Amino acid sequence: MIRMGNPLKRRLSDVGFEELEGKTFELVLVVEMLCEVCEEPLRTGERSLRRIQTLSKEDYQNLLNRAPAHDRVEVDVEDGKIYLFDHDFPGDIHPECIGRL
Ligand SMILES: [Zn+2]
Image 1 (cartoon, rainbow, N blue to C red):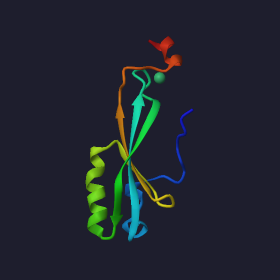
Image 2 (spheres, protein in one colour):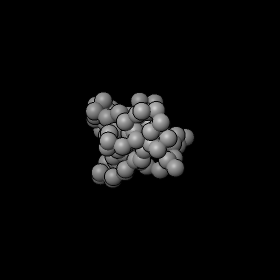
Image 3 (cartoon, protein in one colour):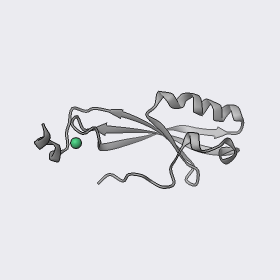
């Protein structure tokens, strides 16, 4: 079962620089493997990229600038993680979606 909608994760655009200032975050790339039929996730893969520090507004702006390259960017301030979401179509479908083909 895929855990969705962690309430601690918020969109980067909803989190101001003030909340991130002076903190270290782990950048995590999350690739959601989507079903060819319903385009909902079949599974997700997570990979830690590197650690970053948001010391200046420029660091924050750099994050905002790279956000459009991803499906969405979410921040878990309490856990110190920034999630970059991408997606892929592995050519697979949910078992329950077979009937909809
Ligand atoms: Zn499906």
